[in-house]
Image 1 (cartoon, rainbow, N blue to C red):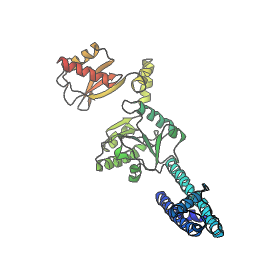
Image 2 (cartoon, one colour):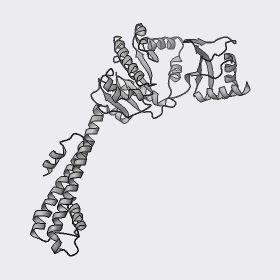
Image 3 (cartoon, rainbow, N blue to C red):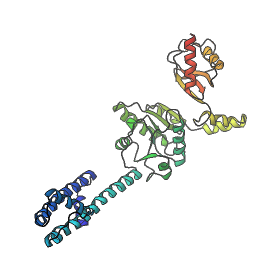
Image 4 (cartoon, one colour):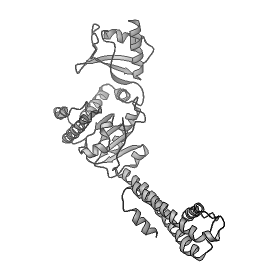
Length: 362
């Protein structure tokens, strides 16, 4: 009986349909056994109603058996109560099996990376060159102001299933090629706050071509959906800069030569590596911020002097104008409306407080 019921329930692969079938069958059987019990046992029980008989069928099928009503005739016991009891056991077992199969199926699907993410304002990382690298990136992302607790989804064709380290840190996993539209949809790329495309092999410059392909598909998909997701690419070789510029990404970071430059800086200026470690990490100390300012018309010198006078830990180092970085400009440099200021502070709120002080004194 148990296997026959499960075979009937499992005709549909949709869990909701299977549960609905089970509940519908339970209702029909409850009414049938209740009517039969009433028809056979009514003459032998004073005050037995149809409602009482349906109640008896329900508690018998669920194997509760309160004992407030019970059959006294041969037909009632062996042709009605006995089948009702056996079918009830099969029904309960089948329903439990459906629920267990559903839970295990969902967990397996999620672990294998075939689930669809229903997220918004999350971060998406394409490729997983190594678990350690992805974990470090996620750690920095979650340390960034405003990104604490933001969900992260990793799209990777290399991984067979979600690593334990990802599950421990609640990093979601989508299996597949990042250039495939259906894979990007499962990762909810169009609803993401940012997309980071890593080089599949950081030691192979030819991976930049794949990065370009992924970025182009992501950009096209997000543009069609009118998404504002920010797209940043990892570039292995600086010689491929022109290629990656064509993908229309919001930012490109070249990893080639950075470690070499830091080694030389540490050799010539001992201790600078520790300074850089602090400056490029959100986890401790002060960080660089590139921010628009409402101080257009104010000289850069006036802003720098106010920063020194203020009680906060903030310094204005220069500005970005027309894509060019400008440090140590003269006293007569006036901030334009399109300029972005280069700020060193423990938080951007410190610079915003400086802005307010200058606006009040103007």
